[in-house]
Length: 172
Image (cartoon, rainbow, N blue to C red):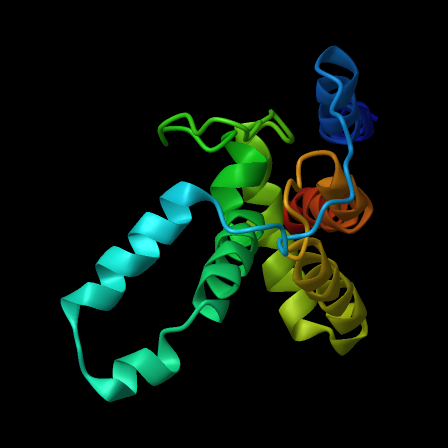
């Protein structure tokens, strides 16, 4: 009886944390992609990196598309970082224009680890991991992913609840 009540409280805490952070600090969702004009600072960085090596091979591979590739990988790595979901990107420095919000309580990472252990053994959960990966690959094309990354809420919360249930069963 008490185990079910505790499990219910834990699941409610996990499921309401990200929506509450969006209510407290609403985001402005803009569907701008990473293909906006190159800024002056990006242009200066590009020219500095290009000037470091004058080989023809570098000039062939390091071209203006590198800026867009860097933007994409920056977004991709932020979305793949567990620090983004459980620790609000702490202890990183603040970056202007990026809102690092509280998504899940830090102790919920234990449930994610448990869910990973559970889902690796079962091939039926492969679809969840593929959904998360495809969503991250698509979201990385947007300039500002804050607010848009809420579509990851359902699969990640499902994994966390699966991990919590698994931990409570494991105790038996």
